[in-house]
Length: 294
Image 1: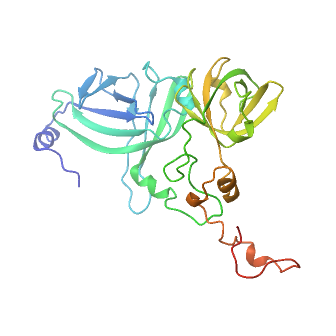
Image 2 (image 1 turned 120 degrees about the vertical axis):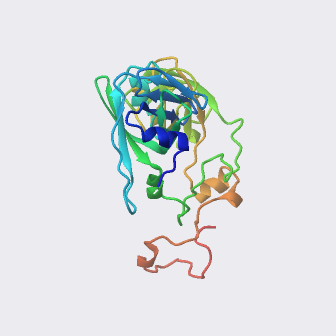
C-alpha cells in the first residue's frame, strides 16, 4: 500500500480536490524536462513542469506476478522542447519518467506515484503516444554473462582496458548515399578497416551527441563510404562532423594480434561450441586434450 503524507492524504479525503499530474523526464543525455496536465506551469524539486496543451496520461493497472505494469502518455506536441525530429532520432527512447500527483494549490502536498521507462513511441501528424514501462520491465533484460567464444566487453571500456584516447578520427560528411550509408572525408591517412564495428559520435548537426554503430567502411577513391547499423541519413546534411573510434570483431585472435590485450579478453575461446559434439575425427586432428585456441 502506498503511503502519503498526512497533509496530502487529508486533501485526498476532501469532497473537492485540486489535483494535477506531473511527469519528470530524464533523457539518456541527462537533459531533464518537466510536463504537467495542469493549465499553468508548476515548479518543485528544482524542476519546472511546463503546462502542455493536450497532454494526458492513461490509467495504469498494477499487475500480479511477472507481468509488466504499463501505461501511456499522449498529447499534442506543443512544447518547443519536444520536437518530432528528436522523437524520430530516438533521443527519448529509454528515457526515465517520474510520475507525480500534486495539489496545485499547495505544491508541498504531493506524492510520487512511480517511475517508468519510455518504450515504444508512435507519432501521427503532431500527436504522439509514448508507452511507459514500469521498472519491473528490466527483469526481461538479459543480465550477467554467457559463455561465448567472442568477447562481451566494449573496446576501450574498463573491462577491456585498451586506451582509445589518441585513436579517434574526425570526419566530415560529403553526401548521403542512402538511409544507412554516408560518404565522408577525413580518413585519408588511416586504414578504414580498423573502424569497422566501431562507433561514430556526432559532433555537429541535428544528431549532435548521439552515437551510432559502424557496420561497414568502403574506400572509393579519395572518399570513404560508412554504413551504419541504424538509419541515420534522414537527419544528416553535408558538412556535419562526427568522430570515429576503432572497432573490434571481438575474436581472441584480434585481441591478441591487433591490440596485444589477450590477458583482458572477456570471452571463452577454449570452450567448445555446440557443434563440437557433432564433429567426427579426421586425419591431422590434434586430439591431445590441449587448448582449442592458442
